[in-house]
Length: 348
Ligand SMILES: *Cc1c(COP(=O)(O)O)cnc(C)c1O
Image (tube, rainbow, N blue to C red; front, top):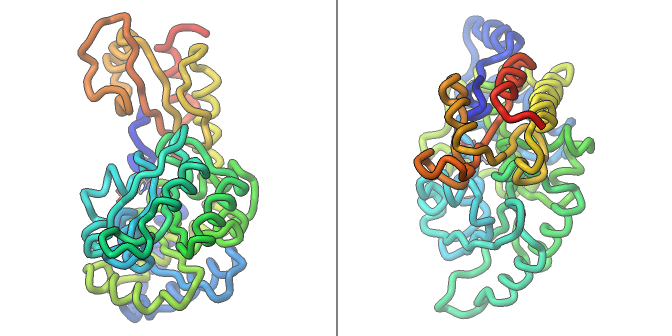
């Protein structure tokens, strides 16, 4: 029962096949190969963005930090939710790669930035005052860190506030595909058409071995991004192995099928939860639930894997009190694993 993260899953056979096929003789390094060119063209076509530039890196933290560094000056403020991965889980990489830009929290329920809160923050931004950091960029995450999902309309509303203030919009899409299939719209609708300027399209949590694509819908920023990526030590010389994986992922809608499966498994999990256990509306393949400590003890005795989040890091405390679990499903989660997990919960 592996519900700790979608990065605990392995690789689908199609991806191994693609790696094996790419492993044939010689190819130019550093992204000068055919597979990388084909991937860029394929993503341009899928995203209906013929001008977009596409760059690969191997971690989401590098993708976020390098994209934000390209969007924001060192004296910029990056507006993000207090639970954002860039704030909580990247060890200061965004601050480091931007040479000191400041992450500014904008609150909102269920892991989503509230438009009113963003407006208020920007109204008091200190623009033009030399003593203050200057508005730099808006950063959103979809799916959010609470497992909820921004709709196209919600992204559009936030991005238009940002653009009205001259700010570019970054989207951390570690689980973009899970959001995409749940939202049932086109990739363009959930990204540039809604106002996203730089998208991190996450592959690792949806079946790839360390492949994240940074898609810059404004190609004017591309050269700077390339220099920053190389300088950060993130320009892979054997680039074809990254590109091959993502190309195979996009073939025959594999990326969408993998994400749909993960989301379906989370829906099954949600349907079996005790009444009132779910903490946030589920947007895709991740959910949070409160269980009694006795239930946690039973799950852990049965070796279920998951994180206690966001309430507590340990299970110490009174038996009758609840603690929250973060449960993430993946492309390889099986109905049997879900059923086994649910069998340890109190009946609905
Ligand atoms: C997993 C994840 C990332 C990427 O993390 P890395 O470990 O650096 O690859 C980024 N954002 C969110 C929301 C994530 O869940």
